[in-house]
Amino acid sequence: MQLEDYFDFLAPDDIRIKGTRIGIEHILYQYIHRAQTPEAIAERYRTVTLEQVYATILYYLHNQVSVSAYIADWLAWSHQMREQQRKNPPPFLEKIRQFKAEKEAAYQNHTKTIEAS
Image 1 (cartoon, rainbow, N blue to C red):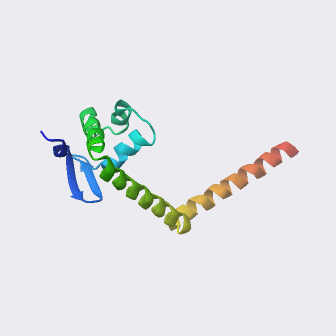
Image 2: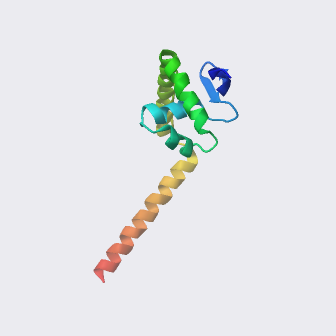
């Protein structure tokens, strides 16, 4: 078995672990940026075997320049999407925020009433 056999290369910016919907970026982010052990990563992503985690790390080590660029692009895209969501939240999120604020205000009023008693 070759190392590439562990992956589905769906597009230049979409490499997934074969038999799963998990992109290599998720495994490698945990490994590189969060310093997680392969065992901890396999525990976190239960559809991925420990062997697949090690294969992903080995693939990264063998292709460090291109995979680092792949991850950097993914991180930039992720930050851009979060910023867009922050600027234009979906309507249900606004309703949740409003509900939370109303609930907090009601709690504060209730606390003040109790303290005044």
